[in-house]
Image 1 (tube, rainbow, N blue to C red):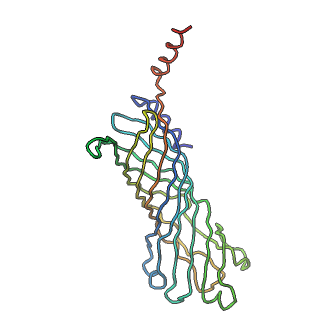
Image 2 (cartoon, rainbow, N blue to C red):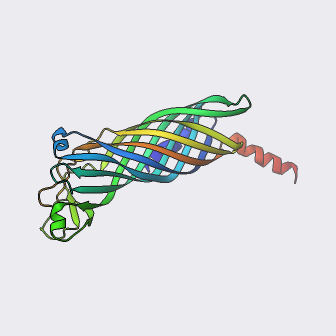
Amino acid sequence: MLIFLLSITTLQKSEAQIVRAGVKLGGQLDWVRMDDKHFRDTASLRPGAGFNAGLVLAFKVKNRYFLHTEYIYSTKSKTVSGKIDPYLKDKVTYSYFEVPILFCMYFKGQWNDSRNFKWYAGAGPNIAYLLGGHGTIKSSELLENNISSLDYKIKFGTREDRDHNDQIYYTNLNRLQFGINLGAGILLEPSPKQKIMVDLRYTFDQTLFGKQNADYIIPHDYNDNLRFRNRSLRLSVMYLLEYNISKKERNKGKSTRKKFK
């Protein structure tokens, strides 16, 4: 909400007061950068697939420059495979509410010497809040107990008992996470007021995900290491409508209606 209010305030100070609003949908490839290098001696980490969807609000600041903001729901995942236990496989999916912000500069391009288009590049902060998560784990200990796999949900806080194998507890977690966006893409214009954006973006978090290991009951000798930082490569499509909300533009419509009375 604070980001939205700041966006509106900046918009009121902008010269043209051109607003683009719409929706976005995209897929992403996620991976993590471990701060604890010793964890890789016992397990390997593989990237996972996720998606993101939500609302887009962008407005012209000056000439070719736009401030681009999004309000999205996203999922990020990773897979941990054991080196000591060859049967260990832990696939985790996290749910986030994110507010990516990019300050974009637009350029003109030409395709096949006849079709004109615009492309852009931008950078800015990424604000993410962890909503929750779930996962599926396999291990030799589970197989010994005739359990092929165990689905679980992530809980925040400290475990109070040793029951509920299907609940994994995360303690001392940084649920509010900050990162940096680097992006580029193509802007297509089917009509003067309609915009389609194909966006490619790299996001790397600066905030450490957690300070402790996750608390598993089974397998008893495994606890996922949470000392990592998220990385994402996203490809998404946005559909936007453009509006001019300046007083001068609104008065034009009023004066035109008066002439026909």
